Every structure is written in C-alpha cells, then in structure tokens.
Image 1: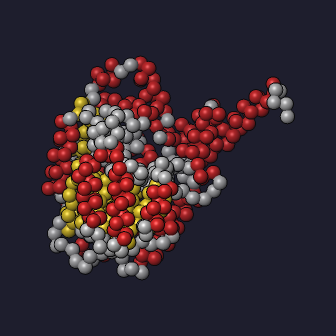
Image 2: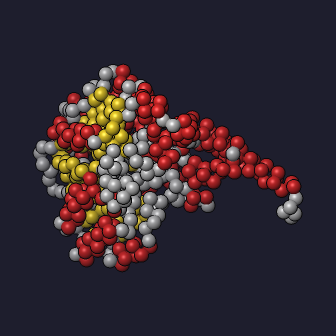
Image 3: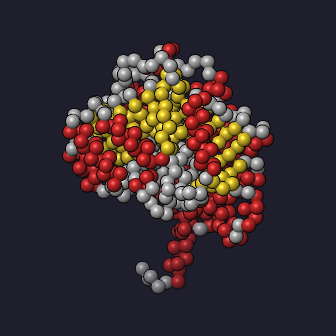
Length: 479
C-alpha cells in the first residue's frame, strides 16, 4: 500500500464517516432519550473521528444482552433466596401503617421493588470522620458477617485502615464479603485484594460482562455504598473509601458528605440489594442474617435500589415523584445538577405551586465539563424561580432530598443522567418528623455556608464561559 497516496486520507475519512453513520444509526435505535440520541447521532455523523471511541466507551447505554443477563441473574438470585424464607416484611406488623406523608408518594409502593417498613432506627452521620467512626465501630463489634460495598476503594490511609480491620475480623472467624466497582476503583492495586483474599476475605469486582467491545464499557457502573454488620446494623450514603472523603484532597477540602446508619427490618432490604450485586459478580449468595425480633416502634423506611436493568427508569421517576409530592418545600443537595426534562418540569411546577424549592451545589468542580453543564442548568433553574445555592467551604458530594416536614432520602444518587439511567444506585427513604427535623437542621447549616445564585450572576458570566457551558450542555444527555 502506498502510504503517500493522496487518496489514502480520503479513504480514511470516508471509512470514518461510514462507521460514524453505522454508530449514529445504533444510537438512534438504542439510546433511551431523544436528547441523547440527537447528541450522539449528530456528533457521530459530522465528527466521527472525535466521537467514535467515546461512543464505544460511553454511549452504548442499553445493550440488551447485558440488561437481560442482569435480569436473569436477579431472577436466579431471588429463586435461591426464596429457600431461605426471606422477606420478613410479609408479616403485616412490619408493613407501613397509616402514614399520610408516605401516602403522598403515591407511586412509591410500586416504583420501589422493596416495601416501606416500620420499626426502624436511623441516625444521621455528617461528614467522613463521623461516618467511618460509626462504620468501623460496628465492624469491630461484628460476630458473624460483614457485607461491604463501595464504588471506590483507595489504597490510602483510610483504605488501609479498612483493610486491616477486615483482616482482623476475618482472623476472628467473621465471614466478610467485599464488593467494589471495577471502573470506580480502577486505581486499586492487585496487592490490596490479594492480601485480603489471603486473609480469608471474599472480595469481588463489579464489572460489565460479555462481548469483545464491552471491555471498554464504562456505563452500568455500581455506584452503591452499603455496609451491613450481622444483619442488625447498616450504613448507606454518599461516602466512598478514600482520604478525600475525610478532607485529604487539598483542592476539594473540606469534603462535605452525608451517610445514615440504620437498624431494623429495612436491613433485610440492604442485604437483598447487596445479594443481587454479589450474585451478579460471583453467581453465589452471600450469607444473609435476620434478628429474631424487632422493636415495636420506630421510623418508616424504604430502600430504593435502582439500576439500568429496571423495567422503569426508577431513579429519575423517584425524583419526579418526590418533587410532585411536596406541598411546602423540597430541598435537594447534589454534586451534579443535570436534570432531564421530566425532573426539570417537576421543579418548575413545584415553584408554580408555591413550594420552597432549593438546590445546593458545590462551588468547586471535580469534573469541569459536568460542572459547566450544571452551571447552565442552575442559571435556567434560577430563572424558573428555583433557589440555587453553591456550598463555599469545600466540595459538596452529599445526595439528600427533604420533602415537607417528614420525608427525606439519603443515598448515592445524583441528579444527573448517569444516576437516572446508567448506574446502580441506592437511596434510603425515611418518613419521620424527628429525623426530617435533623436533616432540616443539617441542610440549614449548609445553606448558611453557601452563596445563592442570582439571575445577575448569569448576566455577568464571561462570554467564553457561557459558550463553554452551552457546549457542555449539548453533551449533557450523555454525561
């Protein structure tokens, strides 16, 4: 072949555009949203040499083989778990009883695969030290089983603390199961896992499977954070295992995040969510435990475990339902604000109903393109009457929803397309006035440390920054 031929470049460009046409057709047929289809299709048609590889990595969002494989794995898991006489919530005494606030979330009983359960105890854990102190204390008291799941585990100071504690408990005969996301924890060295395995810890990576090209796939990530100890105490929220979550990253410090500790019947739901993910990774069930009795009073809780294999877009619909349920206020904190049309419409309608709608965002970016897109959406929300704030002390990573005076939700889901449709997420919904009051006080303290975004801020934004934000918005459906 004559590499100096003037036709070679033409052949290459023609081939790239042909591949771009094929990929654009695939995007139109498979991407769930019209905005995402348009964003991918146009870029693949006109600049395929820049977008083919990103589409291979990011764009193939709904390949059916993966979704069907995950659903089949879930069915197999539930068949296996049925032999354990699982789902203790079938007893009427543990079901949600007569809550007007929960009734306002009219779709939740069917939207969530797991029911709302009474008689739970919940504790708010603010920031990393309080969270990991509580998690490590529970682990030290473990006698039988520890289940651990994080999106990110780093081999740093806090990561090695976790490793040492798990090895200590494994040496005492405690069964330990650790699940992490292969992409989120891509920097975790093999030696970290090897040491745990040699110490008797069962550890697995959550990964997308099947197909030659799926090794490049970074969608369908498991973003959940779950810890369950002996089937009696659990933890869920926004923290991963890394020093940055305790303020160890100077550019983002102090890190602002929230977790929740829970005990009661809803722990069964946390274990079931973990079991689904562990079964996908290993085709085996982890040990599942339940106490003999529960308290006869406590908080209503519901676990909302969402993911791309759901029949509905559960995470997005949860935000829509929570916003529609608000009569007085809906306060939301999220590090990434890239709402879809349904969520954005729900926010605008809430404003028109006279609801106090506030959203708290970080003032420092950890991902600049996402931050730019979030900024443009924030300006548009302000124009629609939504009160938008930026947390000024450091990076804000917490994912919290507060509705009226009783409903709150804390977990791993962000207000962006990735959480809505691509990631496996988990939120703990609570219905209790006392706990909601604690969440309110926490958020009021956060708002006091924040600066409200005004319409004037958008007018004063540099022209080039405005262009950058609009370009970022064009790709927001695929972020």
